[in-house]
Amino acid sequence: MRDPRARTHSAPLAKDAPRAGDGNDWLPCAAPETMRHRAAMLERIRAFFAAAGVLEVETPILSRRGVTDPALESLSLMCPAPGQGSIGEHRLYLQTSPEAPMKRLLAAGSGPIYQICKVFRGGERGRFHHPEFTMLEWYRPGWDYGRLMEEVADLVRVVLQRPAMPMERLRYRDLFLDRLGLDPWEAAPQSLRAVAADIGMPDADRLELERDAWLDLLLALSLEPRLGRGCLSFVYDYPPSQAAMARIQRADEDHVGAAFAQRFELYIEGLELANGFQELTDAAEQGARFVRDLAERHRRDLAATPPDERLLAALGSGMPSASGVAIGLDRLLMIATGAGHIDEVLAFPLERA
Amino acid sequence: MAFYSTNEFKGGLKIMLDGDPYSIVENEFVKPGKGQAFNRVRVRNLKTGRVVEKTFKSGETVEAADVHDTDMQYLYNDGEEWHFMDPASFEQMTADANAVGDAAKWIKEEDICKVTLWNGVPLSVEAPNFVVLAITETDPGLKGDTSGGGGKPATLETGAVVRVPLFVQTGELVKVDTRTGAYVSRAKDS
Image (cartoon, rainbow over all chains, first blue to last red; front, side):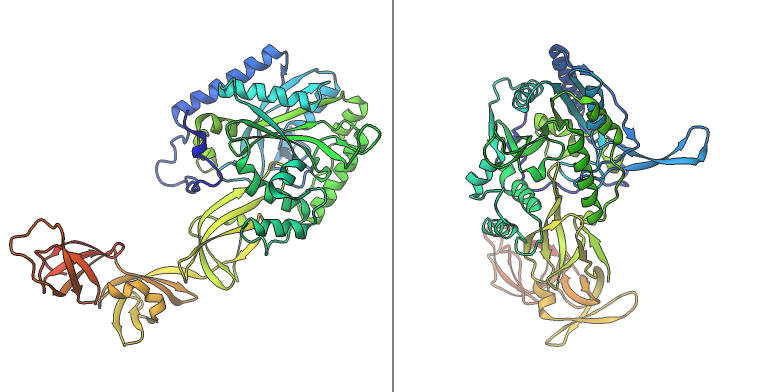
């Protein structure tokens, strides 16, 4: 294995992705040994879940409903209805994650399930981004997210063949308090800007951002590069405004202090690899988040589709308490092979597709 | 006025920032899975050559800089400005010392230079990679020294000073790499 430290956020950036038209663009980008590495990774994952008694499932890649999360963009296509030609044409969306149909399976009593599938995110292209990528997503009914973090660590150790790789857990709030001296629950956008300017972030004085966007910027450019150096770093318990589809723990008799989202992320060698939740199972709360997300999409002038009423119906029928997580397998393969650009682990990236 | 969105960013794109034209050197897309996307770019100020880092919120738009390169023939220097001509249209343009910069010490009449125009005005001038120039002054070297080791300074017809081997004499033509300022070889003719 090449030294993964060779690839860091601060390392010289890779050249622009290969462009079509140089005459050699029929060739794959990934080296033969990388393709063998991918096959071995998939084999290890399937063996891991077979041994753990987790069922492999498949759900549709194309769906009637697009994503509502304002941070994501669904790709879509027009599909003729069988027997109706172009008259019955309707828009279908490529999934940004298999979350909704997998939760419907859980609500129907599937027990623990996993899926390895392609997901699609419009507008995401870079050294660590490709609009089509391979995701591993799994759900553990009856587990809490702390236990799921352990299983994520076990799986990654197996894939990377590093059985002794240590793991650490860092609360989101403590990470910001310890390393930047600010409380992400309390800090106003102007103090976040001041911290960004202090640590020399370019354009901190010019950018007009809301609180969560400042937190994203500080996390991505200042904190992430130092996470997961030689270990598995789990960041957990996020601000409620960044809950996505995680359950929010509110201040009540069991819990003193500010509310937080029961969400975690895994970082290795400065790279965001996985996102997990204590899953939100409350249909009313999920419905309210859909409404908020759609209002936000409207405010930002982003395309929107109606909420997924079949997911809401599934939650309403009683989805078991569960934790779930998604891992970007192309990035995991980058870690395993020491690749500096996602194109190095793809047979044919977009520009050669 | 033309604008570029951050999703059109790539190396070589020319944009306006704070009133100056810049060229994108590197563009990196940064995005947390569930959060705001950013473009972190390194840009070169085309007036000063300085490279700085910038951060954009993805989806922001930036004014395009009307900057392009064109091959032009150097005609003459009138003591203040350098005159160039487009060999296709015969259109003439003048460039000031700021734009000509380092190229001034390498170019002579009739050389074809790469001139970068901003809003139709020369912004910078690049000398040809290799030029052949006559030596106007250098110390007489030792006879028989052909090793090229050591060397001595030589003044060229354009005023540039380069290190040449001891055997090269005043009046001879030499080929020079303008990117490094290094002597390459003796030349028979330009």
